[in-house]
Image (cartoon, rainbow, N blue to C red; front, side):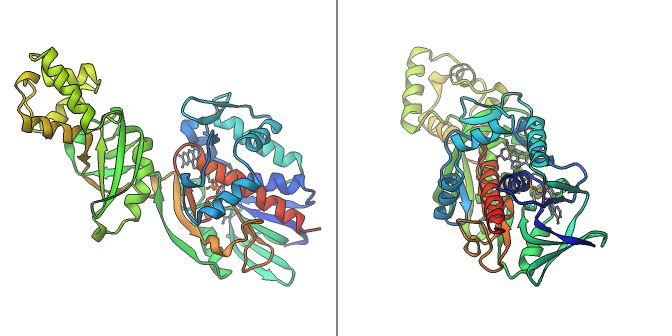
Length: 418
Ligand SMILES: Cc1cc2nc3c(=O)[nH]c(=O)nc-3n(C[C@H](O)[C@H](O)[C@H](O)COP(=O)(O)OP(=O)(O)OC[C@H]3O[C@@H](n4cnc5c(N)ncnc54)[C@H](O)[C@@H]3O)c2cc1C
C-alpha cells in the first residue's frame, strides 16, 4: 500500500491513457500514475494502420462515428480539434505527420513505433509514473479519494482522481478485456450493449472464399428489411473465411448489431463508378464496337476486373465463359449488370472481437459531462477513448477520438485539483 495519495491515477496506457497522462502532466498535476496490465504497452498503436498508424484524418465529422449522440461527438472535437490542433500536438512531441491522397494522416517515418515512442517519451518528460504489468481489478471511493487494487493484491494506491482508459473488448490479447466496463458498472454506470466493429465478414460461399487474396474497389450497401441504411465505398478483400478490407470492416458494425428478424443484407457493387444506366451504355457501345470479344475479356480488360474474379462472377450470373458480347441475350445482360452492381453477398456473420479493430457500445455518454469527460454519477471519475460508447469508421477516426477525449479528460482532471 502506497500511503502517499496520487493526484491522478489513469487506468490503461493505450492511445487515450497516454494522451490523458501527458495533458494532466502538462497542466501541472504532480503525481500522475499510469497503469497498464501489459508489461509492453501500446500494442494497438503498434499494430494500427498496418504498423504505420493512421493517426487522424483530413476531415473528421460527427457522422464518421456511431454510438452516442452526435452533439456530444461534435463538442469533443471542438474542445480538442482534429486538424491543426492534433497535428500540432504530434509535432510538439516530435512526430511529423504526412497527409496521403486518401485523406489519412500517417507519421512521415511510416512507423507506428515513432508514435508510441513519442507518447511514452512525452509522458515521462512531464513526470508521469508508468506502472506496467499492473492490472487494476477494483476501484472504490474512500472518502475524498479513490482506492485502486490490482489483480494480484500487490498494489493498492490512493488517488484523488481516476481516469478510466481501459479500451473495449477488441483484440483482447492486447490487454483490453472489458475490466473497465465492470469497474464502471460498480460505480453505477450503464454500459450500452457492446459488439465487435470494424471486423471482417464471414461467408459460407466457397466460390468467394476461393478468391482469397484478391482486392478490388467496391461499394457495399447495407439493408434492413429491404431498406437501404448506409453504404461504404473503399477497397474490398476476399479472404479464406469471407470478406475484409476497409469497405467490409466499415459495414460490419451494422450487420453485427442487426437482429435476424430485420433481415440484414449486404449488397456489393464491384464497379462503384458505374450505375445501372452507365453500365447499360458501356455494354451497348462495346457490343457495337467489338461484338466478337468475349464478355470475360471485356470485364477483365476494359473495366478492369481481376480475371479469377470475373470467372466466378460469370458463373454466378449463369453466363458462359466463351460467350461473345454480341450474342448475349437481353436477360443475360440484366443478370450480369445485377451481379456486377447489386450482388447480394452471402454473409453469415462477423468475425468477432479477435479481429475487430474496435468495440461498439460502452460507457453511456448520457452519464458523462461533455465538457470535462467527468462522470455525472461519481465526482472525480473521468473517461476517455474506446471504453466510451463511440466507434468510428476506418481512416484514423478512432485514434482521433482517443486523442481528443484523452486530452479533455487529462486537462479537466488536472484543473479540478486546483
Ligand atoms: C489491428 C488494429 C488496427 C487499427 N488501426 C487503426 C488506425 O490505423 N487508426 C485508427 O484511428 N484506429 C485504429 N485502430 C483502433 C485504435 O487502435 C483504437 O480505437 C484505440 O487504440 C483505442 O485506444 P484506447 O486507449 O481507448 O484503448 P486501447 O488502445 O485498447 O488501450 C487500453 C489499454 O488499457 C489497458 N487495460 C485494460 N484494462 C486494464 C486494467 N484493468 N488495468 C490496467 N490496464 C488495463 C490495456 O492493456 C490497454 O493497453 C486499430 C485497431 C486495431 C486492433
